Length: 295
Image (cartoon, rainbow, N blue to C red; front, side, top):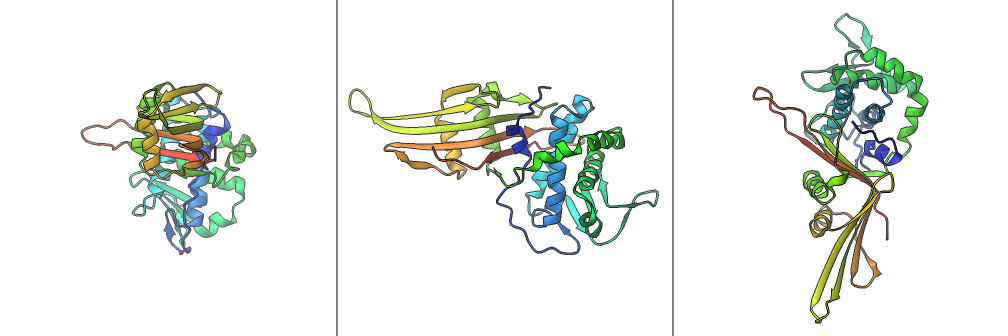
């Protein structure tokens, strides 16, 4: 699996700046609970660390870790689901040992004792979140992998510095499919049937002019730049309109007759675990971008 370790892929782990925090209850979770969001952030950072290729695990376990982290995030965005639940009671595992957090593989859920979580140091929060993530991802040696994480925890913690810099776009499926059809060279496998496109910048413009006969002429193109600086330019009317429909800001003032859409830190893709007749799985699409910038 090709690994991308540049900062643009780091942006993909970040939480939406549109989250509105609700009041904290004694037993609650989801995107409205700051403590649950804090736990999720640690999970997403650890997932990105695994995807970077620095974790001593197989490609298949890497895919499962990243996919699990992303699925937790996608479910947190849905008001009807609370995959990370902050509870008041003390948690114990099957052996009776007290735990800060416990994952439930069958329910795809993690419970966290709020009071214990809030007392942990930042480093211990990452390790705690990692252990539960590895459990949900069915990592064979999750404690050993958590030990490897602890050796580089300072470096991994640094991946969270851009909190709030990204935004999840609505209509992720349409955006990803349109982006992939426009720039298939940037569509890369992240294991199994999962794919993602990571771009440093995506700049689209639409210009009104006249052709040689004086007839109206509309020219629309997009420029995609990946983290390595590779740049591709394509006619892209469908992509431009798709982004426009997603509600991203449009610059209409830079040049008369021309509108611009400029996005940074683009990370769109699909998580598609294998389905079976007995266990059908619906693909999960995602698309996050950095704050739009003016042309």
